[in-house]
Length: 257
Image 1 (cartoon, rainbow, N blue to C red):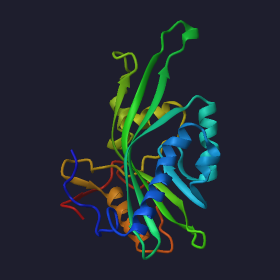
Image 2 (cartoon, helix red, strand yellow):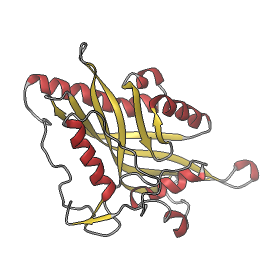
Image 3 (cartoon, helix red, strand yellow):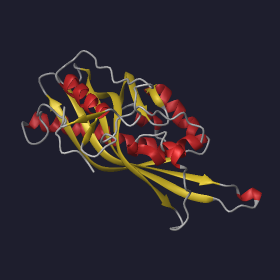
Image 4 (cartoon, one colour):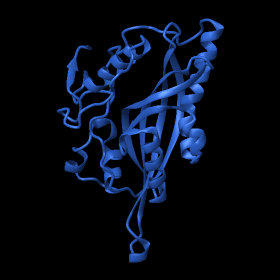
């Protein structure tokens, strides 16, 4: 269940508008779509070209990383058998032409495959996927105003809901409640499964809602505040959240803000 409260304070150029605004939004939407297209295929040079030199990204398994460190960790993960794909479900862009700032919002599903057990030990492995619905936020700017190139400065997600999917249609693992309770509601199964691979999963990322019905996630509202600051031209925004932020499920905020 989602909260009915609108988290965004202002309306920016997001549909229609001048031809120059439409062109800018189209360019930025291409940057967003580069994540699933290029990262999933290990097209690292194309992937790196989406970002400015001092870009940062946040994900569950990597935590906060510079873009170059994230690419290196992604390569290492793939070498170790990490199998993460992304399905883009739709992308729209918030643009402020007065500040040359934009935020691309990409609905996506993270789908990661896992295997428990070892054929070599005579035990038939359990193979399963975890699908996690999420919303990517790409904080974009003119990296070089002279040539008009847009680049991504930050990427941070809101994790909405996740589930286990048995690959054979019938067999999936059962995680203990105390294991799942270590992770926020938006990515419980993804976090538990990724930690099984040895990843130190970040438990302080934004989720769609608070721990109780009718409540907002404080981290989600905080991210929307940062989106507004970025679009309004703030010199920089701090998207970091403390690993000991408090309740890992997000402090509840009743009745909107």
